[in-house]
Length: 238
Image (cartoon, rainbow, N blue to C red; front, top):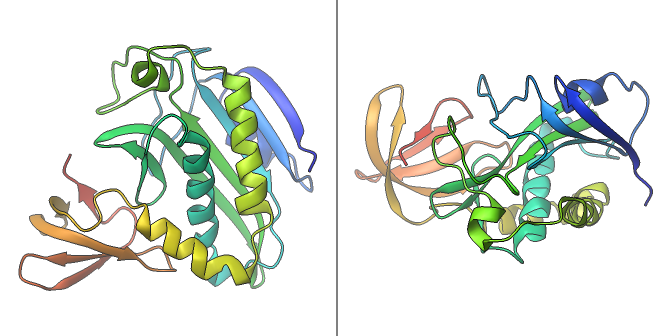
């Protein structure tokens, strides 16, 4: 397929840039630096100018019911992971971060517009640590440069990611939903292992069971009780 590309220098946010492109779709905006790069919730994204991939993708998916919109998050996480597998056997930290062991390679901020009962537009804002060698604020970052010991061609990597997005996200249909959910759950970071978490009640030990189609994560605690959380209600202890 053909993407419309915008190559930017310094911008507040590539998500904000594409959100202003009303009525347009299949867009990609890359930036060398974002002055207001965001992560999930109130988190910011640390990135040295010109070293990493900071980009947003805007699509208008066909026939994705609003109730199933988390499938787009799952499919996008798998697309990004597939593009990174030649470098590392990475996992998916709920909801859509890319991790290698306990260190973070990538994060995605997804903003969805719904019209009626269907998803109208979806913007995926992605920060991927590529060639940065030192981090100062992020708690547990990892770059591909640190992992491989060499600089990575950012343009070639972006093209690989876009190819995966076309295959896994653009062409997504309801018939694919069960397989996507199964593959996403199989790739979950720390699934099937006992670890500590923090919720509104404090610190507890539990094991990740799965992520539901709605996006809620299900844990089984040490007492055998199932616990369900939406994003923002649960913190991983790393």
